[in-house]
Amino acid sequence: MSKAPFLVFSISSFSFIRFSTKEQTLFAKRMSFLVKAGVPLIECLHLIRAQTKSNSKKRVYDSIIADIANGQYLSTSLGKFKRFFGEFAINLIRVGEESGILSQNLAYLADELEKKHELQRKVIGTLVYPVFITVATLGVTAMLTAYIFPKLMPIFTSLHVDLPLTTRVLIVLSAYLRDWGLLTLLGFVIFVVALLIIRNRFEPVRTFGDRILLKIPLAGNIAHAYNLTNFCRTLGLLLKSGLTLTASLEITGQTTKNRLYRKACFDISKQVMRGETLSKGLGDRPRLYPDILTHMVAIGEKTGSLSTTLAYLGEMYEGETDDFAKGLSSSIEPVLMVMMGLMVGTIAVAVITPIYEITQHLSPK
Image (cartoon, rainbow, N blue to C red; front, side, top):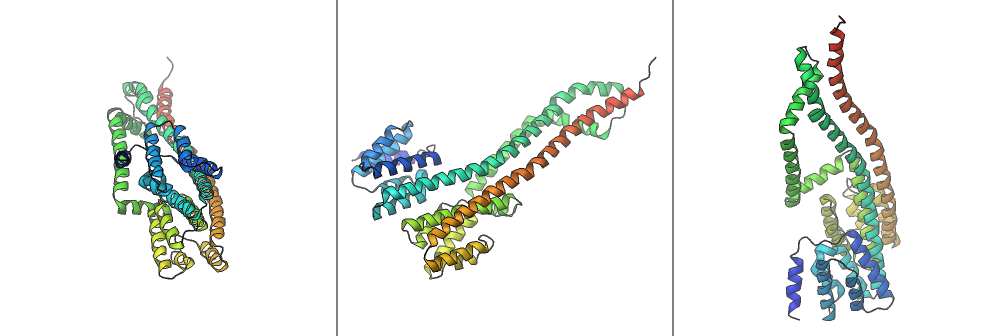
């Protein structure tokens, strides 16, 4: 008994522990199946712990098992590990325990986590190819400039001829990369890391970044659709599980990464608490929530089917996210290919042009 508080403290202090979305999904799926099969909760946790390979995560489960053995709710014990499981999962489980539908809510949670993971995978997958092409282009260009071109420079300098502008620029760039290339790369990495740290530490900087992201052409469309998908799905599922609208909006805000949408959820929750409707709160923010969403929510409120309406809207915006992601990929690919061709072609011209001019002035004896 005396070891439990120390165990919770030691586990919460391990900043390297992380439960991935896939692990959370498997946890919810297995718990739902075992609870539905009539297996006691503590036995469910023992079975899941036995399948866990990480010793750190086993200690997390040990703490949860000790809490359940002492008569605590599962949601109460998971609440000590909010950083691992999140407010959304904990509240959904809490409602399931209080209303006697824990297995059903765990199944809802697993399905929602799976959909979120799939949506993230689609968005990230769209960006992988453009990033790969960009890195490959810069890598090839840097290699040609820093290592291949210097081997030809003695030929140009020994002939004492006027070199074209592209060749002179390439000579300067080659010298810079040779002398300062590694330091420049190191400085760029430090800059990116510092920018990420500042973004995570300072809320105004993060809010500013989120606002800029929503205004970027194409990428902003994906960000809007992605946030609307998560908003509709999360809010709809929380309402379906039995939570009040104000509590659902608060939890939705806590699980939203974009700071503009997060603040909007909290502000709308306050409006609803004052007696205003959800559709009114959404309508006051047309830049974040489009008219069709506001109108559909208003219909859902009038017909008493708000959670079903939000689930439908979530599917609709997921389709839009997928379409925008494919459109972004299709738009960027030709631009990147043209840029790659121009960069490599410029280097080729810078190398070939002086050689061609030199051979033109050579005459056979």
